[in-house]
Amino acid sequence: MSEAEKDAAKAKPIEDELEKNAACRAENNVSKPAICDEEPKDLCEQLVLAEAKAGAGYQIMHDAKIGDEPRLIAHYGMGPWIKKEHKKTCSNGKQKVIHYFHSLSSYKNVELKFKKR
Image (spheres, rainbow, N blue to C red):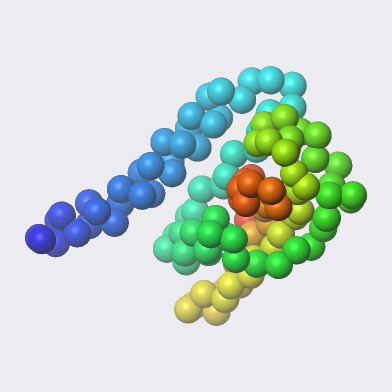
C-alpha cells in the first residue's frame, strides 16, 4: 500500500464523521434539536473523541439529575441516561476533557463535546 493510500485510509473515518455531523446540523431545525458531536481540532482530540465514543470515562451524573432526558429519549431512544466524562493528557501536556450522554439500555454514546481543550 502506498503512502498516499495509507493517508487516504486514515482520513476516511474522519471524513465520515464530518459528513455525519453536517447531516446532523442540517436536520436539526426543531425547537429542541439533538446536539451534534463536536469536531476535533487536532490528532489528540481525534483520539480522545474516539475513546469517548467507545465508552471511555466515568459517570458524573445520573438520570434523576439530567434535565435533558426527555430530549435524549425523543432523539435517541429510551434510557436510563447518564452523563459521562472522559479525560486524557496529550503528549504535549495539555489535558482534554469530553462530556457526553450514555444510554444504559442501548449503550449509545451521544452529544460528545469538549469541555477543556
